[in-house]
Length: 215
Image 1 (cartoon, rainbow, N blue to C red):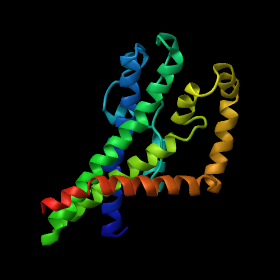
Image 2: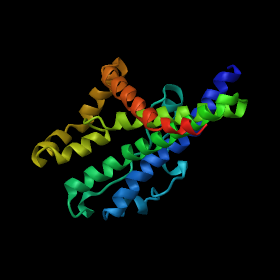
Image 3: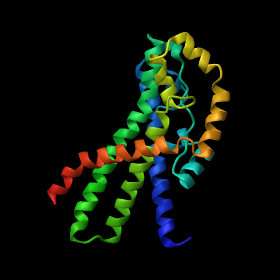
């Protein structure tokens, strides 16, 4: 492995131990605030990577740039409104990634502004880190907003679908997960995911472009 690839994997590793714990901790915090103590009782209301990372999901994120963590347990019986409680706790994860993506875009713009007078090694590494953090967060947010099991978007779908129909669909969640996994390997979702990633990236970079005016 050459020096450049080593830097790429190290920055991806550092970004991963920030991205996945924040995503899962956001689920845990939202669920806890809505009245469900399950995640807090199981030690998931933390940013510690040890509490959230899944070995295989982490390896996939390091190699392919997309992965997963251990799901945060949620018990809808604690929610005053189970339908909205499930949707809000599910939405918290992708929203946290979108927020981190915007902050990462801001970091990229600052690094680009500083580099106008010449970029040293540390500045290049910092830009690469923010860029990696930016795209990992975007990918994870878009991926999880797909309205199909087991992604967070399927829980948000509960607000739209009649409850009886939603739970009828969820009975086949494991079968749907297997089908989705095969479709992902075949690249069936690539056009949609790429389109969403591209337009969100353009929006975030445009909204943080004002920073360059400071340099």
